[in-house]
Image (cartoon, rainbow, N blue to C red; front, top):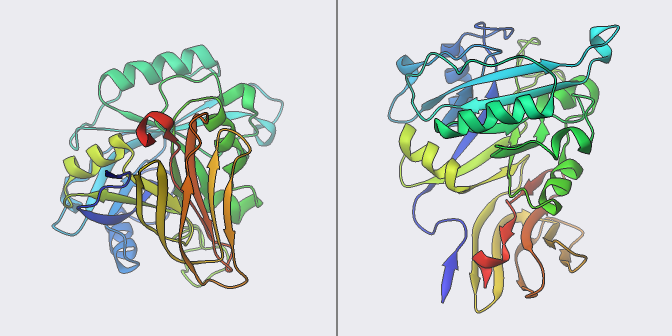
Length: 313
């Protein structure tokens, strides 16, 4: 029996799940963000301004969904701000009109932050952990966190600023720890360059493809909650299913397709050009999860979430 891991029906909607505007320290208005991202094929932007939750219902239209979100920072003590270890987390609201957040202590402490995450989760929020390397954090900082939904595997702004926008290894650690997190690739754009042709432009680099029945706030949020999405900086996962114990993927043209597991069993397919478009893998019964990664010759990568063995066999 064929079981689709990314839904067979519905449409993929391109999303940036980490964005800043003039409402915090970004340079563009929410209206300008909508215009510029739609021009690049995006249908969803999460407006996650720093430490304030601001709905933007005026931006919603038949071809665009503004997700209501907030990015909260928790800073460790340090002699100078540039050396501070930080937690930055995005909280996505299930209610598009929500304009207040839960009470909390801004303390750099795993238990305190986990408590906030769990309380937010009880109210329907999805919690995303952001940019581990820019945050100067280690596995001991993020692996104990509770209440997480997603993990940034790529952040354009951090990559442009410090060459440390990747969080792929850290995401792998979360997978092996059994956290079952959804990978997201984002821009975290502030648009300080204010020039889309600039080498410092921090927009349109990382994105998430969300598959939903139609473009509405509720459908997008529920698809995110189910994990019906993948993260990318270029390649596309077009179909993903399991049948008779074998996992199958159909992709855009890439030079590498990998089925990665909780162990060293890996089904890797490689080419010297972007000529690969499909691959399959007989799932070993003893592994705990399988996930898909893609790579293309331009340096782009894509990541599926880890699929628990119970979803596959």
